Amino acid sequence: MTATIRCFALAALPVGLLLAGCRGDDGLYQRSGVVTFAGRAVPDGELRIAPDTAKGNQGPGVVAMIEDGQFRTANGKGTAAGPHVLTVLGFDGNTPDNQADAYEFPRGRPLFEPIRLELDLPANDSSHNIELPVALDSGHQ
Image (cartoon, rainbow, N blue to C red; front, side, top):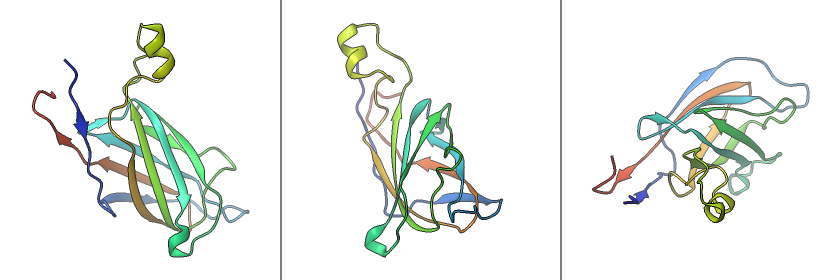
């Protein structure tokens, strides 16, 4: 039986910040941290970070891979400071045995629909603990 998981993200979720580091020479800052869903580390996924142009922010967008709940922007691929939109994609990390499913889900089955968050990133390297909201259907364990 397959359970359906639906997530509801608020415009700004509580996100714990641990700030450390210093400004990059190019005005970009490293981002790292942990992503959890339903109290567990997201096994596999992506964290897409883009400047919130609706709020007047500019700069490059980046994608940080999530592995066993951990993410870190690649060296030289940080973000500017200011308002950003984060999109989180999460997968179970189990490649299906069926070839057709493995083609469609190479990183495993999605744990949730993409979740959009808004976050004002600081003007220094920073670590973020992102706890994703969840609404569980009956039958999901």
